[in-house]
Image (spheres, helix red, strand yellow):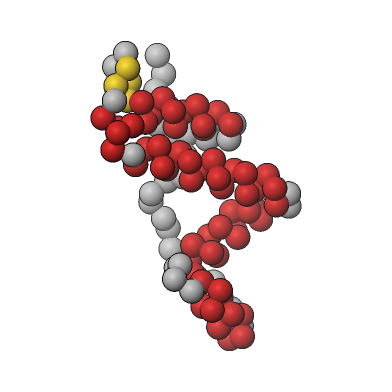
Length: 101
């Protein structure tokens, strides 16, 4: 699960790279671009796998934040959590909120 708690980390960039990053970010926050790039590097050199994992984390966030999914409960479990847990299994169980029965 991608946590909502983000820890600040300072990175020193050459001035030309800094300006390129600001231009590349446009309407998006530059820290998101840097965070995604670092995550992809840490997860491995395989850009496809890193991108796939990022997509899964984004899908988990969409499901968890969806009003309808959070309001529907089946057998005492929120649909948002059930679906998010199933997506997390594709990440190798990367989910800190998984309930144990």
